[in-house]
Each structure stands twice: as C-alpha cells, then as structure tokens.
Length: 186
Image (tube, rainbow, N blue to C red; front, top):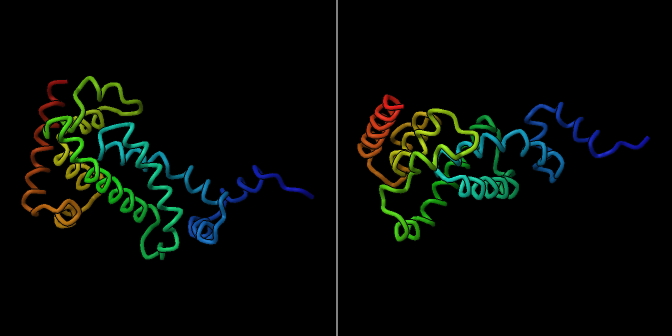
C-alpha cells in the first residue's frame, strides 16, 4: 500500500509538538513544512510589529525559518517551542534593524522610521491597534512590542536593544502616550 505525500503530512499534523520538533531535528523536511505552516503567521505578525514594514517583515520571516532549520538542534525543550521561536524572531528582527539602520538613517529621519497613517492603513491584515503600533517611532515601537506584546521585562529589553533600563521605560511610556493620543483621535 502506497501513502502519498499529502497523507504523510496529514499524519504528522496529529503529532504532539515535541515529536514534530524531534522529526525536524532529524532532518524531516515535511515535518519542518508543517512547523512552518503552524507558526509563519505569528512570526510574520511579530516581525511586522517590530519592523513596521511588510517587505522587511517578509524578509525577516523568511530568515527566521532559514535560521530555524539551521539551529533547530539547539532547541532543548527547556521552554515552550513558541517562546523560543519568538525569542529567535525578536533577535533576528532587531539584528536586521541594526544592519539596515545606517542606510535607513541616510534615507529617512530618525523619527520617520515608523509608518505614517496612510501607509499603515494600507498594510493588509492589520487591525486597529496594530495599525497604530507600526506608526510609532522605531525605538518606542520596539520597546512597546517587546514589553506589552511579547512580555519581556525592561531589563531584558535594555540588553537586547543596548539601552539603559530607564530608556526602555521612557520609550514604553512614550509609545503608550502616542498610542492613546492617536486612538482618541480615530
């Protein structure tokens, strides 16, 4: 009896996440495809919130899954896979911003690193708050997403973004003020 690829993939959909990860760690590409399908929308959403650019978010999402394939053996199961994946995603997105920051600063002002209102309205799949979040200036947006959405502490954010803890707190406060102001005017 022959089993086609779609049947094999559908059988893997029933696997617990730890078994699926083990198969990916053993080089099973169809298990990796399933892992990708289960997590790509969440990874893209996080990238879009952090980067405020659909194009950059797509690039970084792709990079996250390339890195995931290369580094899946490092996942030891000491935390939930989704937590580990979000940490990897945050680090890659922040790294991407650092690499492109010098170029971006030559093209746009530092305050212009977020999207304007019209550009944020054109982003597919963004709802009310997300449309406002992508408008925030870069540092305020990063801190807000990492703290309010991803649950990182200010100490962790300060380490990730090479800033003082007080700067992280003030950027978070600034983001909240801007979001409240924009929300009240909508």
